[in-house]
Structures are given as C-alpha cells and as structure tokens.
Length: 330
Image 1 (tube, rainbow, N blue to C red):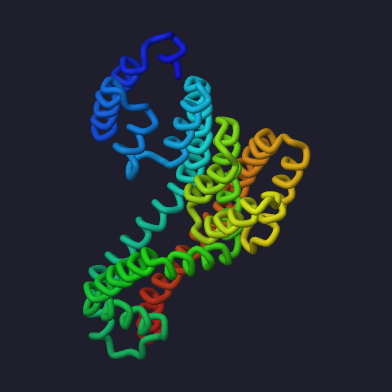
Image 2: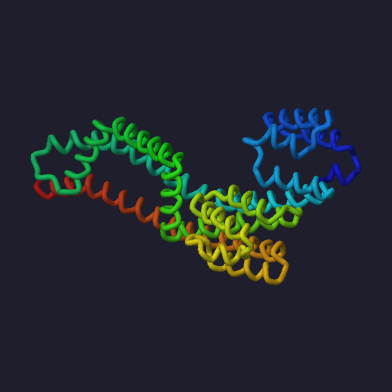
C-alpha cells in the first residue's frame, strides 16, 4: 500500500515487496506474480493461480474486489489493517499461553526424571528395611516401577492417540465433531466462540468495504473461520440470503453463533451500515477474547502451582515417613 501510494507501477511494486520479504517461499511466489502481471495477467488472477493453497482467501478475494472497483490502494490498506489486528489478537493469546505451557512441560520433565531415576534409589533403601511402609511410599514405589517398565510404551500410546485424533480431525465428520466439542468446553468454549465471531466480523467488514458482493463475502468469511462448526453455520445462511432474506435473519437459525453477532448484523443490515457495525463488533470481540484469555490464565497458573505443590508434598511424605518409622523403632 505504501509503495502504490508513492506512484510506482504495479510490477515494480510487487518486485520491491518480494525483495523485502524475509520468507523465501512468499518471495518466490511474489516474483512469479510480478512476471505474470508483466505478461498481462491481472494481479488477483495471478495470486489465485500461484497462491491458492498459500495465501489466505480473504487476501485473494479483497485484492480481486479492489481491482474490480478500480481502487487497489484502498484494498491493500484495508488488508494491512485487517491482518495487523488479527495478528495482534493471535499474538496476545500466544504470549499469554507461553508461561503456563513452559511450566507444564518443565514440571512433566522433572516428574519423569524423579520417577525414573531418583525414586529407585530410595526404593532399594526402603526395601532393605524391615519395616511396614506407609501407603504414600508404597504408591510412589508402584508409580516408579510403572514408569521404569512402561515409560516408552506410555509415550508410544500418547503419540498414537494424537495421530489418531489428527486423522479423525481431518475427516469431515471428525472435524465437525471436534469443533462442536471445543465449543462445549467450559471457559475455553466461550473464548473460541468469540474468536470465531471476531474472525467473521473482521473478514466480512473488510470484504464488504472492498466492494465484494454479499453472497461472495459470506462464502469467503465462512471459509476463513477456524472453528468448522461455526463456519458451517455461516455457510448455511447462503441459500436464504440468495433467496432474498436478510443475513441477520438467516444467522438467527444458527446454533453456534453468538446472539450479539446475529443481532448486530441484523441491525447493520437494517440501517445500511453493516460494514461499520461489523468493524465495531470485531473490535469488541477482540477485546473480549483478550480479557477472557487473561482471566482464564490467571486461574490456570495458581491451579498448576497447587497441583505441583501437592505432588511435591506427596513425594516428601513418601520419602520421610519410612524414616520417621525407622527412627521411632530405634
């Protein structure tokens, strides 16, 4: 958008962006697009042919709408704003999840080392004692034996379960089932639902502002949504809208879309300001996702600490109780 505003030709603009792009795959794609444009192809057609599996549908379709309306500069400005906001929301969630994920991974590693190497040393010492071991010690020894014998088997079972889950998710039935289950998880389900609403509102507002017809905008917006169950609800509105009914009315029959998204879409339609209404709604949902994610993590962090503390206390009891029994016997 900046280079186009400076007045450079389109081919030279794409070449300059390709030179500045740090991603080699994208840079190579842009050079191919530049060559296509110089040979007479339209920019949107080249992006579709070269980057159908690489570039987001929102990007390709907005560029197409910008070309058709004769305002490519505004289309790229809207795309820059759109992807910047989407990336900001995603980065805030990722950064918030980094610390709890790191603590869980480190804790799991430490527990595995303790159960595999440290506990057997105490086990040999306790078994040589002629005393009755308390139940925490017996349980810890049993857990240690289990880890020593079946650690690799356990890792293999977990890996196979993850692979099976991924294969199930790749099927149409499995993807919908897992998406629906995701929406039903307490706390997380509400965040996923709001994130999906934000994706739809952002994409729909961007495409409509670019001048795309509403039916095509609905189709593209549905395809960009991460949750397949919500995406299917959006796609199900197409026949009704094509038949002359309002989008808000058709969305009202959906089971997984937030009520506010449905109501505000209908309001935007009635007032003739759907693009502006959806943009405001997208910013609202972005803020809600950020707030609820931080709130959920603020509850998760002390829960992790409590679980680790309980496990540490359990190990200490298992190790020291037999020693106390031995000292009392003496």
